[in-house]
Amino acid sequence: MQIRMVSLAAVAVAMLAGTQASAAPPPGTFETFNTGVDDSHNVLAEGAGETHYTVSDLWYGGTVPQYVETSAHGYPIAPNGPWLGDNSLSRWIGPTDQNSPFYYDYQTTFTLTSYQAARAFINGRWSTDDYGFDILINGQSTGNWAGEFSNWYNFSVTSGFVTGTNTLDFIVYNTGGPGGLRVEMGGSVPEPASWAMMLGGFGLVGGAMRSRRKAAVSFG
Image (tube, rainbow, N blue to C red):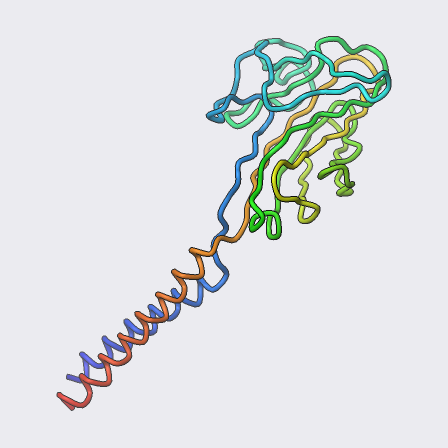
């Protein structure tokens, strides 16, 4: 009987440990898009049109035609050039014609509820040709930057969100020749259901502890 009591105690401790681990609620998500993917987040083929980002010329004004670039294009995508190589999550995107130094604004949008807007954050990484000057959330600077095109640079956006449509702008400076942007990111927000699961876990632990006490009385 002593063995049974120890077993019940072990179950309770294990359940409590699991509940404590879930005290920080696992985050929910909201939809954002990497560069060069379709509506199902599958990467697009060489030369396809980018549908989730628009590109504006900040020097002359107006939007700029753009396309998806892959290693099938050859230079400048690795292994034939210095830009980061292909993967299954994103593609390089860029204007179809750029040979002079310009600032470009790559803008994407996403939608949040009022609950999400109060708690949202975005984590990701970006690479740029030539320099990632800043990332703006609804027109506000986040202070994120990227050094160049052969490495990833991590970024985070933790405030400045609004209810409804949000804009995220990646400001890139091209010194001439090929230019482009690569982004991989995800949006997260704690969801109320996570707290309900935690409270339910405490109830299970309480039940296990009561069962242990009953076992001790009946069979001690």
